[in-house]
Image 1 (cartoon, rainbow, N blue to C red):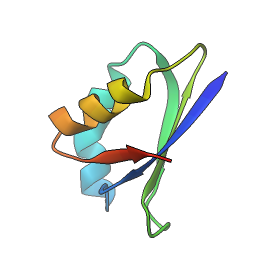
Image 2 (spheres, helix red, strand yellow):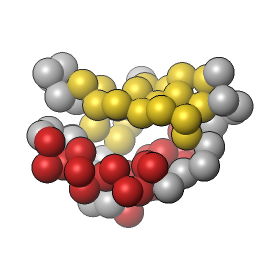
Image 3 (cartoon, helix red, strand yellow):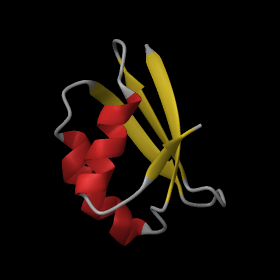
Length: 70
């Protein structure tokens, strides 16, 4: 299982509900969560196989958010 982490501008439950359909639609992703208590709003994404960080960044960009892999 691969785990990637991203610093994002996802700040609240409303933001999470906005990105949910986008991230849930990715068949590569088995689980994801955002730590909105962390000042960097860390998105953790888990996948069963190798995952491309650019795919996550592009998906969030399409949803109106930014992500920087950490």
